[in-house]
Length: 305
Ligand code: NAD
Image (cartoon, rainbow, N blue to C red; front, side, top):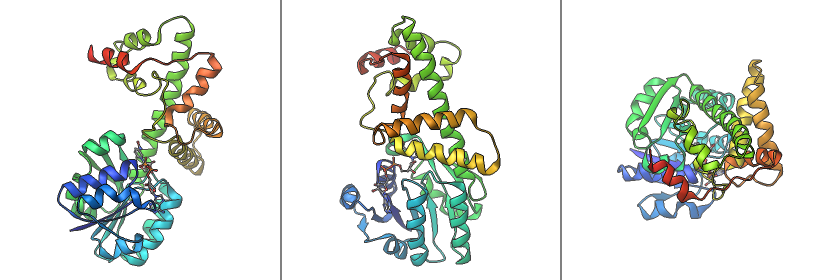
């Protein structure tokens, strides 16, 4: 089976390397040719565009910034793909867009499935990644082994769009929870408690035992948002997709909308290329609090269990 991979960024680059390591023949493309260097070194072939990838592949993966790029690449894939092949879009995409693309592909008898991922760059590198899949279950079953090369939690959810809906539910919850945690932490620090000691203590309380606070150690507590694990501009896109979906469905999303407005404000500060969590700095500013704990001290707390 020959695998095509388009979009070799923070996530796609690592996922594609794992597919290649599993022994699949591979053809790759990215608008930034230099992103393909590790893949070509590992034996993958370069193609000059999405259509050329499609013509050579039994399965095509895309890991693109968002709906706009997925539609552009999708139009070219449609011209090149064989009816026996399938497209799995790993992008965090709009459910409405993936359903539209799926319908267009169905007219030519080509299956298109949405399969957004969760686990971050480290998960993509180590294969500790969840794949949330929507689309034809028979096609999912047919390509299951390649999906297993990308993630250790490959989950079929339902018809086309189901993967994207689940992904937006997950991400939107994550951002809203982070915004709430930043609020209470700035209050705690301003009330005179050392941020590291505060974090070390609440980690051991009832919410803390669910690991709710642990990831605050990554960027927020360190006050360090570069290099990004996940760019703010992409997180902002996810927030927009979730709140747009809510509007389409007539679901009020007060907390998510507020969180998204925070992200918009952070984008306007020029923080789009910083990590997604940099929007939490706005709350620090409002509170008049600066949190910057050295990484090694955070690690010492984590090592205590
Ligand atoms: P990224 O910007 O690092 O990667 C996107 C890649 O797509 C880049 O290499 C870019 O050059 C390429 N690209 C853009 N337009 C293209 C086109 N028209 N044709 C071919 N290649 C094109 O972003 P990322 O962090 O790897 O995220 C990729 C997707 O995965 C996004 O949808 C994101 O929301 C999602 N995601 C990211 C994370 C994370 O933690 N980084 C986690 C889960 C899901």
